[in-house]
Length: 252
Image 1 (cartoon, rainbow, N blue to C red):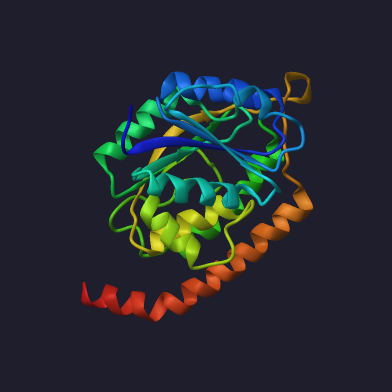
Image 2: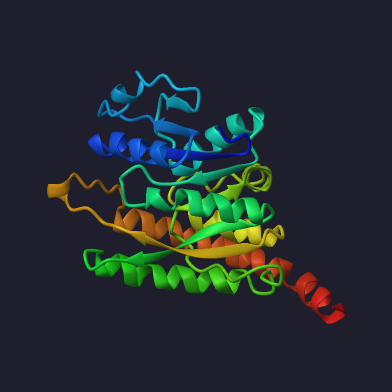
């Protein structure tokens, strides 16, 4: 039983994929918590009968978004004494067989955030693969001069990551944002601003089609608008920090 690192899986209406993802995660790591974020598809029902000290099911009454679900879990995890959490999606896209590798990297570098660098298969939607390049470009711009302790942020949107819990909670409590689809990119940027170094590790990602039980809650218009607003405020935050960054760089 790990006393410091746990897996956290937020879920909203992911159907039978949730139980499969939980089983794979529990086979890879002894402590797995699931946050069912106001789901209406009864996907939590099979999990309620799991009797295991390393498993915990948190059911939120209403949907608040991925970031809100992770915030609830991280707060409870810190109370329980955990220091790091690996976040992964509930729809089976993330590789459970890499959990142990990512946890080992985190234990070797506990001060760092361990970021998955996605390896896409041929089934990945081309529009999603190409579209994230823009978000990645903005993320690297927003974190200029924040990478001296680690690597540049490789991918801003891939949610298979290990976070140090204390600094993540600190940055989340300072902003009303980071509660929905904007969580992954903004978390990486704000942690970098706080001085948390990044370590990128390649990990395969698989997209499931509807016939395979694949579930996607990504809406191109709504979520791209959300990302646009996020990068706008992050760029403004970067410009606000720029004089101090340049002054420290000149003195280095």
